[in-house]
Amino acid sequence: MNVKIISFTPNPEKTAAMAAKLTHSKIKPEDLDKKSEKELQSILREVMKLGHTSVVEHSCFSFAISDVSRSLTHQLVRHRIASYAQQSQRYVNLNDPNYVTPPKIAKDEQMKKAYDKTMKEIWDHYNKLLEMGIPAEDARYILPNATCTNIIVTMNARSLLNFFELRCCLHAQWEIRQLANKMLEEVKKVAPIIFKNAGPSCKSKGICPEHKKDCPLYPK
Ligand SMILES: Cc1cc2nc3c(=O)[nH]c(=O)nc-3n(C[C@H](O)[C@H](O)[C@H](O)COP(=O)(O)OP(=O)(O)OC[C@H]3O[C@@H](n4cnc5c(N)ncnc54)[C@H](O)[C@@H]3O)c2cc1C
Image 1 (cartoon, helix red, strand yellow):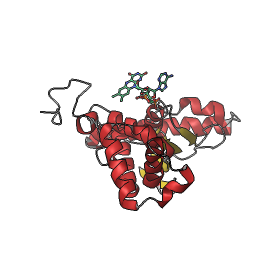
Image 2: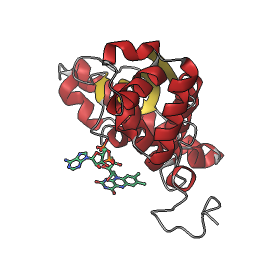
Image 3: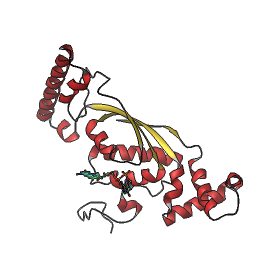
Image 4: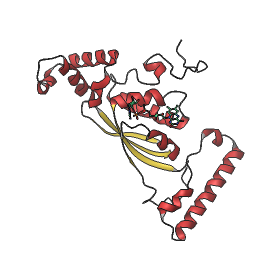
């Protein structure tokens, strides 16, 4: 899995802080960037603490994500407050077997062998269908959920905070959790105040909506 921020709102934290300041100020919005960096950062810290996160919707982040499974992207695109572009299985021939192996299968030699064999058989059939003139858009029906895919996703910071609450949680599946943790690592580098407390609900809100008392992260 590769995850990289490819672009984001310039000055994402200043933009959000200006939006926050605007609501309680007589100053025209175009003049708000004259406020000191220190004051704007302090305003942003305060709104984040209060949970008034609508102002961080003004800051967006785009991620390039490659070599993840279709299982993962099916879960990812359920997050509606976002924009997506995904490699098409209609227009791209996926001739070579390229798939994700779940760690629980990878660590068992025999299981891994059977898994790889099944994948090889699937791809042999897929390529045979293409050779017989079946278009990729139909041949793909036999490809598995494990098939690797590439996707670009853009989310605003508020939607990302929601995404991290749901998908950094130990209750989320390992692959999307891995993705969410990598995305969080990336955004923290460019917007540390906004994402300071981001993560599963037990971290961001101190509550466990799943009521998983046996979870090692369950809030004390
Ligand atoms: C551990 C886990 C297990 C899951 N299991 C399943 C499952 O078995 N089956 C399944 O179908 N899904 C499942 N999901 C997906 C889940 O139900 C959500 O669809 C997904 O997490 C997206 O969350 P979201 O709606 O908060 O995000 P977004 O779609 O990004 O929405 C963000 C927020 O905007 C608001 N919002 C967005 N759209 C609307 C709307 N139309 N009306 C009102 N408010 C809106 C809501 O407040 C929402 O929380 C699972 C998710 C997790 C994390």
